[in-house]
Image (tube, rainbow, N blue to C red):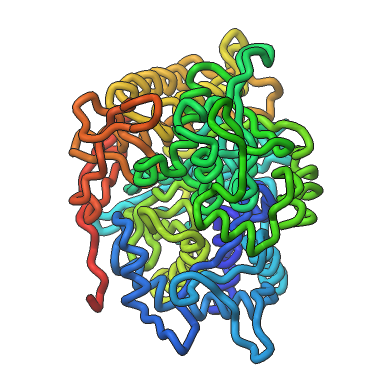
Length: 620
């Protein structure tokens, strides 16, 4: 087991409870991203439990598939197993609210969305960690897996082991390697947040996606990442009530000079600006379909343009949304939905900060703990959140490499799902992987001699690469500089706004960087940093896979969808605002919702791309 977030802990506990005791949980950081308060998920999306409005697995699966790019059998499995998974978490102590009769409270379509508060995924992780401890599962902390080891059996490539580094011994590299002889590997380290310059997840969060790509596992939906506005220092989303109270946005040039109310360039009146900001509270991610009629995603476009011009964007909670010569802020002039919310909640105070404190008295203090002081203007940026793509799986969460499983955000389970569906997918996926391992793959590993004969060449190659870093030159760019280059390139070419020309250029740069990493090495600030140097190699390969997938998607006729805009001088749409028509782009090609773009490393840095048909819902 690689990774100890909610998905990984759940899989380990499931294996133990099914009677499988011969396993080890390997993790860099207990809890992983799931335990990070900044990126915690607040919602759990499962089958409705309101018996007066009955739900069904097929109806649930259809909803998961509405956004496209989702296999029907996987969606159906998630539906069927969602209530047992949810009840297991509740029984473990996750405080999902109930009424006086014991009915679980939920909201949304057919009561599918349950929540234990803003830290729901963190609470889930804590309770699952308790189950792992109760089952006395062997756990190796501060270990980083650097390579998967594979063999052939009956014409199919399968995983046979793994190579890791014990970070506690990394100062002495010759003593730090750990070799695993095993029949099954479960990757559960989350999505590749370290790929982006700005992300809501902790900087440098580990990812095993590159490990899977390097051994030839297929990956799907790498085109699909969600982006939105965040506070620059903390990465906290600017969502919910933070937007509903309608703070003021402005930008500045170098040195804080030339303050500009830039939203006035896009709207015709202050009331339009304020209403759009309000609706960003309900629609945090950028969405290409919300650009029409001055929709809330115009805010994201405006911020993007300011940042692209080298300006800094700020949000000020001491001032109401405003624009010169466009009328003053007035709650009575907002649209009907905004007025109704503010009146019904009593949030009619003079300033955004006062309204926010009325809605949530503790929010200012909580954000202070996360380096965000709302009493002062805060810098804003655009950050990546969830990457919905990952290693392609079947309905047992097994990848295209035999006995290699992917659960949680490292797996390709959805294209564009409802919020909270990814939390349920991690819980159901862990169950399915555990059941498959116990029922089908519960064999004893080979003898040590047989194992070493099988993997000797692979391990020797990895050791040679490690030696190159440990004893390599110092007159080369540092590990951090290489990582920064990868992240900035990915955010520039593969972010919210993208196009074929930018992707082609970025792919060439990424390939050149990878060759540089393999031939010239990276400068280590300390000997133990060789682990991070290897991480950059995997990160660069992951970036190439993402960029190649995006380029292939566009070349196959794909357009803007989800949380990104595909620029095209011959496109059929523009962003139409007070500035006029600009950013010509393609609308979504709806015919591509029933296909998933998959990539697979064939040789060296070459990735083959193909459009795989979406598998149907079994009972449809």
